Image (cartoon, rainbow, N blue to C red; front, side):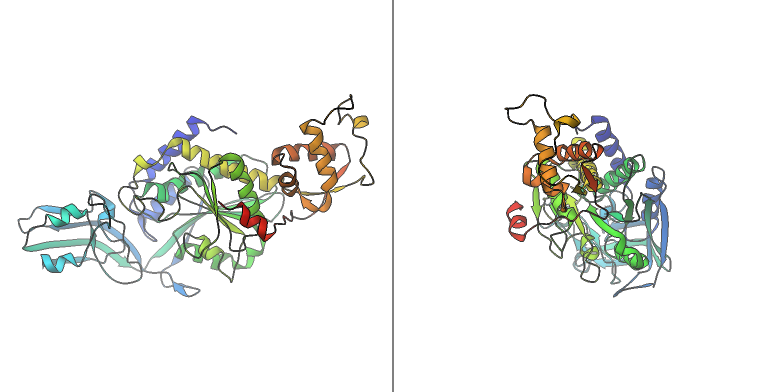
Length: 445
């Protein structure tokens, strides 16, 4: 599968359209983002009321902001939310005050390492307010009294999330999840939103064995709301991916599920190894994105995470430097293709029963083998022999591909030919991919 420059540009264009919006875990910016996605796919938007108990959490008041300013003693604007929406600490409460510089500084946040970048800061669950600005601006502020205004609202409302359900031949599901709550951060938000939206469109046009559920929700509280509302149906989820940070130049990185032995873990390892030799597979840890909630012990869903850089793994992370200049159209396209290849492998990974298991069946008389003997079998014939040898109902096609080192697509085609020749029968139920811990550890980079 080779990437299309047109698809990469389409993804970059959508990320560019999403980038300026001031998103948060609730509010009109989040809804605007979901409506833009809804123009591309038939997204169903759900609302969860403020104050709703969600396991150990509670949906906070809805937050919206119209403007925020810091004026110096001479009335000149030194910080303006309108210039960049990272200038405000997300969820800042309304304020109209005059403070001297010493008191104001306790409300000002700067980037730890770069004097020209604006950091990203939040205060979702503690009433507070504050501004973020480049350190060089802070260091140039004169003494005196400053005027500070934050025109925001914290009031009873709701949290929004979007969901697109695509039924398949079976009710067993694959879950695709991306966070939709970060303001003007290009790689850490808009790249995942763009890729997940385009992936959903591709899935809608593709034949599907599994049912697919694509969710766009604010981080942590959004995934918890989704889990609470869907708890009775979680047993249907057989595979899942959290998507994000998919537009920068770093190699693909797959973070394993909490189990580390889920079928999606084996599939992602196989696909990444084939697609990008410098890709990485990292073990699960309880820090990151919404895989933390989806894989928490009470749910333990078979969900991994696909990114390029990891959270907090590149200098521009959570700062104004995570802008559109960080995104690459070719990286977005290749990320989409990796997702597509993972899904195609999920769809094609079956277990089979050899219907003629006593010795090798004669492939030649079924036009499945070369007519001249005495030479080494071609890849196609080798693949068939591998499939016949291993198809006792316990080995999936991915298991066979790993053992034979012939590649999943080659093994899948061989199985299809053998099934058409009535030498194989698909075993009912999902594929049982077995991975010993030693092999899993050895595959990590």
